[in-house]
Length: 203
Image (cartoon, rainbow, N blue to C red; front, side, top):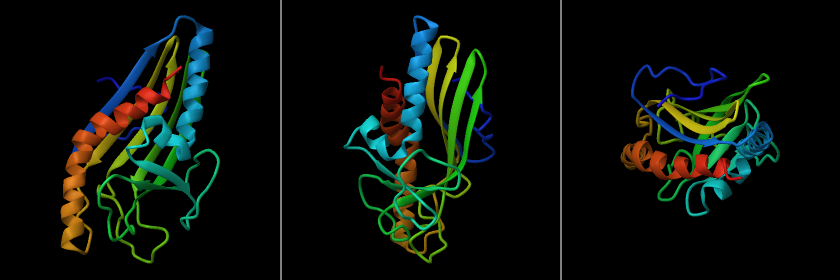
């Protein structure tokens, strides 16, 4: 699959697995393409509404500051995202998984527009614990993109350097991370992220 990495925000896969999920829509004219891109861009930057895009029964996302307090408005570099996935959570994250927003990048030209949000597993900002509170190891990244290339609008999620997080102190958390990490590469990309990319491009 050729990913629409117009912003160069998707890193190389150096170790572990990679997963690409993408939805593409061909528009009839420039006005339709521009309108769809702007709508999808707004949805992508509104992290607190992601669960409504992909479905209430799937993971819920909350944008937070560096102390873990809820934040309204568009996502920005340096903020955190709290993830509540179905099933048991980690002890390190008090039941949640956490990522830090590593980069928010946009590129704009006459024919091409693109926005990307890259996140990386992080520790729980509400706790003194330094262990990564996520089912993936801290080397993993997920990059969420929306792009317009002429009349083609695409939305994608590109997971790179995927490996289960084995930093957890407890055996149960290590087992949980291994299981959820495996499911993340398979079910999460097939269900959660596909529903998400489809939802971003709903007219």
